Image (cartoon, rainbow, N blue to C red; front, side, top):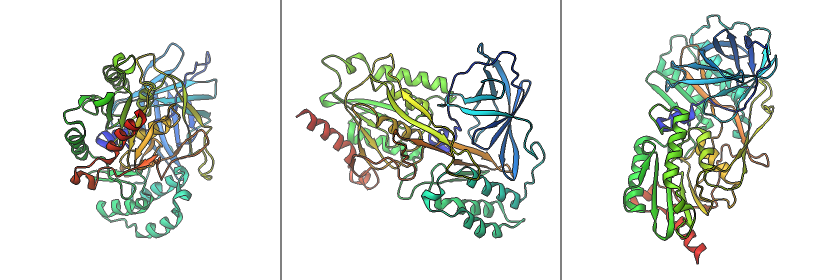
Length: 466
């Protein structure tokens, strides 16, 4: 979920699909490229890539990226080091030509890529000033959702009726507070943690009712509780304290990962991957993964994992298997008029790492505070052999990367526009991934000094041993 301190960092990484391609000799990348889905058009002229966000009624210039270098295979790396999202992190996009009129675009550090097709020209109005009055801003906000959001039918929400109710309430002279509140009221009933509105001094995050937003203060409270009550000492911490590990009695390991983001101060995907690798090298040692002293069980605690980069979740999964397995497939809305049409799904497979791996039983602790990349990791691990035993509560139910958009008045909003599919074509959006064994998670248990999910995990390992 990217507003996130660590959670927000995750949810606003707009990324998707990956791929490797070679440029056709003599083919120029210059021109206009329409993205498959995502309501995005790119214009490449020389060393500049301009990004436009489009709807049926608007075309807004979002950002410019500068060519950083050309790879030996002809791929072009473009970078924008300004404020490309509320976190202001550097964003790198790799443009991979695939013939004269097709290409792929891959955001750095994120799984998968996006299809591009060459078109004759920018849509009408692109590059022209866009009215930023209240009504124009409202219309762009409203229009984006029916063109991109996949879940109105599943959630039983009539978006046209919302327009009929709220558009007459828009006044030219209404205050920022009132206008922000109006937009918030429109999307709050979706209870979707990947819907956001961000304006100076204001921030709205959707969330499923009766679940707890994983904020940094709450994370610290939970970590202190776990160390005091469950571990009886301090966790060995890695990655800015986001990863923690402890050896428990009876050769049980406990691994807590509070996000798949925030491992470094720079949030550079390559640096975070290295930090994760180093932490896992220190945790999943040969002594713990093989031989007479190896772990006979691992408690993997993702109850507070608000998300981050799917690629880091896949990297962790690769250290927990010695056999390849299907993770999930991913597709995006691909027709502004038909919410049932999606891009061709891209499949992702977990490939075992060449480094030391833990392949034994796992008890995976889950909760409603777990979302985004924390859930895509969990979805992938359902296909592992042996599959983890999930204990706790349903996860939050948000899997799509967040599509970050800018409004004519400069405010930022975000929404999901993708589905993550199981091998049978199912999605867990909305309801979340259910546990095998349902227990309370935190909440009232904190005051009572209880941790039912943790205790049940240890009990299950004891039962398996007897």
